[in-house]
Amino acid sequence: MKQFKHLVFAGTFDYLHIGHKRLLDRAFELAEKVSIGITTEKLYKSKPLANLIQTWQVRRRAVTEYLRERNWLKRARFFRLDDIYGPAIVDRTMDSILVTKLTKPNTELINKIRKKKGLPLLRIIVAPLVRGDDEEIVTSERIRMGEIDREGHNFQFLISNFQKKSLILPKYLRKELRKPLGILIKSQIPITNNQSNPKSQLPNNKTLIATSKKTLHFINRLMPTMVITVGDIITESLLRINIEPEVKLID
Image 1 (tube, rainbow, N blue to C red):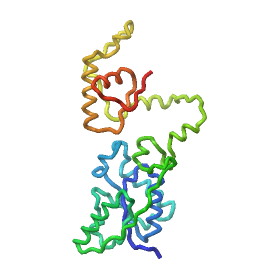
Image 2 (image 1 turned 180 degrees about the horizontal axis):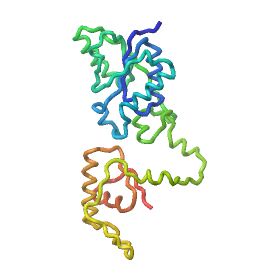
Image 3 (image 1 turned 135 degrees about the vertical axis):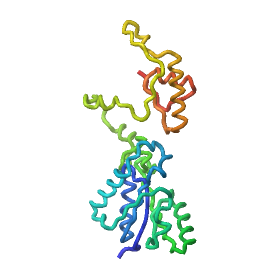
Image 4 (image 1 turned 90 degrees about the vertical axis):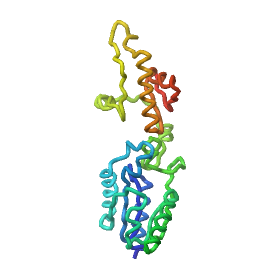
């Protein structure tokens, strides 16, 4: 006999990681039936590197496969979550909600609405946050930013313990890695291609200024968590308009 009949909890579930799995384990340990909300873009569009978040279908598939492996799928129900409430403010059968200390304030709002509607209050269960080997919280944001893997292992620790050896980029990856990620900002003024004079192949100052200002516009609009420049020309161009990239790759 489970402690609760119908538990609800939600998350982005991007790059399903050890923290998500611990929550899923806890949810099905507690309740006979579990409703799982998977957030849509309306809720996560302001998250760091939101453009890298997997599609709703991919995220649901990952959770589904995890539940199927543990024979819990028949006890699960999925729903799209466009706001912080979802069906928790209307479903009378729900008797509990699983959260972390980061999302607990939302449950208090949910219970206020349920009380106004004459619905029984949800029992709030606060699950502990999972921490990686660097003692920081494991989150999808940190995975998207390349700090940790899905098991919470910090890449800096992995690299420091990795024996130094020569790494060669495979030919099949070269074409793939040439593809730009995100928005490609092109120069407005054509660049000459005079092989006898290599300097003539470089964009002039007007080109650099125009392209840099266009880049600044996108940076201000998108508010990225990190700006990385590759090459001395683009790096110098951004520095001239007072943009200090977090990472600068210069050969």
